[in-house]
Length: 409
Image (cartoon, rainbow, N blue to C red; front, side, top):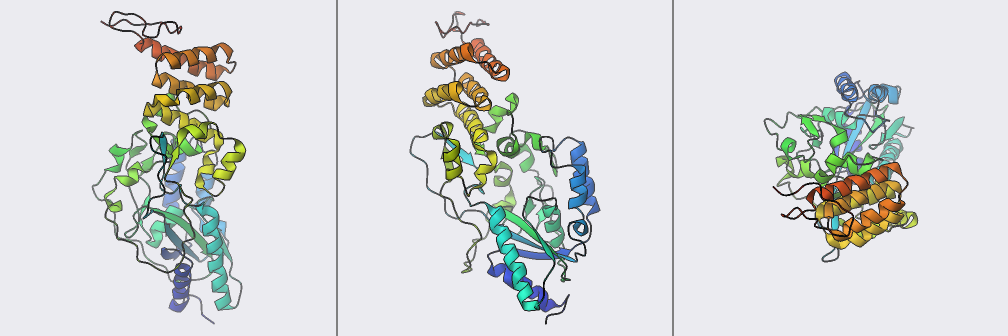
């Protein structure tokens, strides 16, 4: 039987984890992380976590103390799975309006797949030891501060965009962890940092990286398009650009993520699989039913946004793309969609402008009863009115009911 804290036991863990498809494997202790608890509490107090009611100071306290998550814990096994596609998925139909999705979205949902293989890792260790092992598995949906654990284990270091940067896979990794009562030889943290580089900070369109290592989640495009359940703030909608689900900008500009080494073939299957898209056509999303949404995204992270949220996002992206062929679809959803989608469709029509958009907005206003949607329609109409004049101060959209407010000087 292998003894606790023996090098051979750790070698078994690492070998088994890699055999199960984990690209990165490190080990750290189960000691508390008071500094990370302090930082997490501070972010909550600063309002950086507003809109995510589950992220509380109590959660920060729990997630920074592995012993509270598994009494008697001695070690934490930290793993990473590379999700950077080395072959792009199929392109969308030529000429169609598409929205970008974060690079992890085309993969199958990583939560369940990684948890299943982490449990298989525990079972493999139990078979070799001939006894049960107390353990608890974590993959991005629990209090454990996984990035802090990954940093301490030397799997990577914190980038100024708060992502963990690894030497071999950059920040394109999913993280997972197993807290266990096994006593394993710990790895040390890496002696690396971002140095003076701040490329990610000015690159963020919404200014969500308010300082090095500080994210205001309420401004982050990933939060706005995935976690946010209400309206996207009006002043941020143009800054969302063509991002339909998530955002990769702060990772794309990171020098660590450039010129990464090509992955060596391992002969071991990844826990993940590609689901078949690298972008999504926008107009079909607007008419998607709940059943169609569940079927299309049943094993995709995209389902996290919910159908209504994805349709909301599609309206915003269509407004930003300026594709006027989307006017009929936006007009239809303005009449028939859920209130959250109707309000964003009104905003998109106002952005697209023109006589047809004006008529659709006026017709919708005549029948709309939801106060917030009416407000969105009125704001869209007023915005068009401010521009709906020619240089003689005449209405540019005669017969639409859009009155010009300002004449050209």
